[in-house]
Length: 242
Image (cartoon, rainbow, N blue to C red; front, side):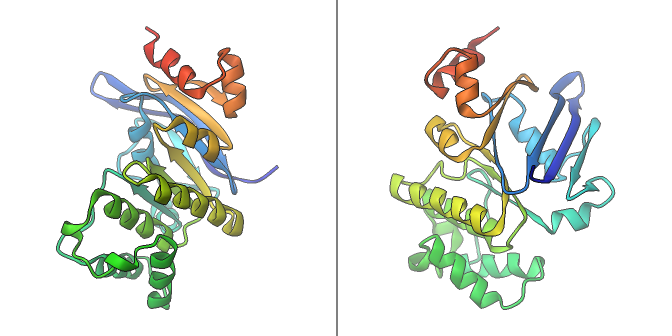
């Protein structure tokens, strides 16, 4: 069985009297894409923020590469990266300048080669010299994804990575991610509100509702468990339960 790269045990986050994440436990194996599903407010973003070390858990533990995030933060963060439709990059820099900054922060060598490769893979040649504030939403999405892939992470956290992309670029992006997974053994945590995309990309799925895991397994296992033939129907059933 593949090694567990990420191990989360009894992860809990409270904000005052509100519990955003409530005793969540899961693992991500080497080379695995783990889907994270749930309606808005289910605790997905809070979970990812804790995995990135942006907020401190109220209780529980996070281990990556066999190390505890609380005590080996710098070592772990140097081997992971994150992409989301909902983050931005410094607007006054060009696309290429932003990638140079990221490459420098991560201590990459032969930076021009790394940037050329990621720009080509994500078809960004036509806007690599464009000032970031002038990018379209789809171009910004590709920039944030390029930033994440550029550093050659061992674990990648992806929050709706194709949400602003047209169908052609979204399809190519999914193909690229699967190819990187195959070639580099990259592990991913993947969120999306596109149920077909979740079925295509995820080896396993965990489903959050009100901060707790309500079901998990492959897409087929989850659909069978709820007596549905479509993952979207499962999503609606869980989201509408009182």
